[in-house]
Image (cartoon, rainbow over all chains, first blue to last red; front, side, top):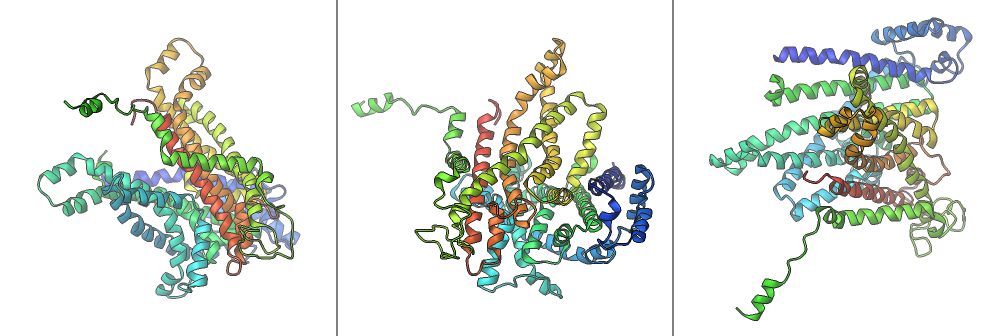
Length: 313
Length: 291
């Protein structure tokens, strides 16, 4: 299969998934007791305003048509008006996306920096003291809730030692890096525990593989074998794992943004929930789903690029 | 040959332990087992271990640092933090069970049926899996909680609605593997009914990964439950739950750090207990021959 047809078939797979995602989000608000128009409107909305919403959502028409209207409105970028912020949902979300995207990428970068070297050290010392120490550390990391890690970092590094700001986002790139250091580290400490576990076994597995033994018997130096053969192949499983962990990464981001008052999508989601802002909840849930599927798609692409075996099968 | 040599030669070698027994004697398992059984005892008899009434205000002892009288200190209303952490075991261990059990039961039933019958049901199930993994888990759960309203029971409903899919996916994969074995075809040839083949023959052989996953999932459920409690969407104050306790201490973190720090230790310990036991169980229950 050529790369292009692989890409096309992968893109086509997204369509049915997306229709179902829309069904879930559509049903979510319909699960509420009472008139969805009331849920989607300001508490002080007049009867005329409610009627306008009913018309837009097709609430006076059969259920199936209501779904059709929902898909049509969403595809044309109209996800309603946020009750909380009194602005179009799409605008509100687009404004916050860069913050969450920055935080997520930052966290991914940090978790690779943390997990990568440690996984190699652990794998090369398999079952040694160092390996056991590293693995125990990460086991504790996996059992620690994200908000607790965040709170600890916030207390000791930001509030007591004043090394980092206690919240916010800043305006320039460097300020973003500085402000988001602790939130990104919070997410990364949790994510790196997941990566580390799998990367360690991947490295051990690759070290035993025939082509690595062959490379060694050819007389290649240890560092060349590790760098060129082991690293590249261990990368494939890491990329896959990172891609598949995007869901828990986003979940972690959501909680972390709340702890550190980062003005991103996650914190907005929580504000929307407490304000019962259903148009915004709908829009955000959809945004998260879109982001995850884009990452899945990207992961598949990178994986195919790193591992020619997949493209050809 | 000296006497010593003969003695050494005849000394029986250290008896070789069965690998399963060996797995049970590993320090990791013993530690996990100890943590887990203590947690269960604390959850069942909190009153026997808590030194004070967890909800009793004492305005003469507000925000006291850890001391002999109050090992975990007291909170902004003079309540004893240790007692509140102990009483919270009841709530959080309950979360570990109820947030996973129904999802497992539903997931196992659906997963087995889908794997055994295949066809259109299997195709539909594949779509359900695709959609579920497209949402970040927490986003979907809190979206459902947003609709149902905050609280422990609604949290159980929300988690079950999402989490059963993961159990079903795992069960489906395991049953599919088991079905390639001869004993499955033998059952069919003997004319056994499909529920009998699925639940009496295939499922028992597919239980190991499920039990391991359940253990890990209970650890995750405690993390999730306390996160939702912290965010104000799970257990509601004044109920003592670890996440709620941490949230209560958040505003006093610079003046009374113990209010938030201590409940967190309980979360980490309990989570660790579940994952240590889960990891070792995987080795204990693994069928002979496999490594």
